Length: 181
Image (cartoon, rainbow, N blue to C red; front, side, top):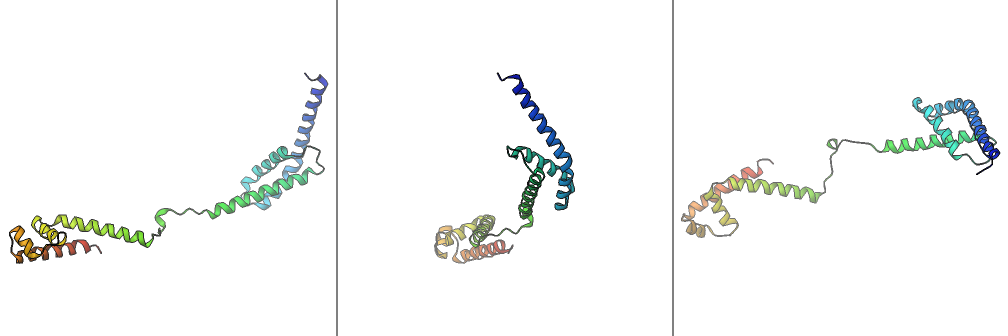
């Protein structure tokens, strides 16, 4: 336990420091407010910055007695303004543009793949729309590489009938696949 007079000395010291800080605030806050007001356009922030200046002053004041606390306060205020200015510049650089207003660049390979995928989808859809006999003739000729005569023999058609179905398939596929281009 500390002696009673040591506790009272600490309490008096804190009380004296509080009074000095109160006097400093009353005399310097209006000056700091004018100084800050000249430096910023949003005057609503002036009192917040004055308060931040004093908070930084109390938390960062050197242990000994300052000879010119007013100058120390102005230095703190100047640093706060500099930091605020830097944050504003960084914030201004970060521009938000809605994604629907941006033309997103696509690599040529990606564009080709998207076009190929779209073409393949249209081709398969058109192929599925062909009549069954025409689709079978087309598949045998293009996928299994059978001749018209081999297809005719397999399906019981004439070579001329196979030619008719191939022409019908090619015209329909050409129309359906390339209609959107």
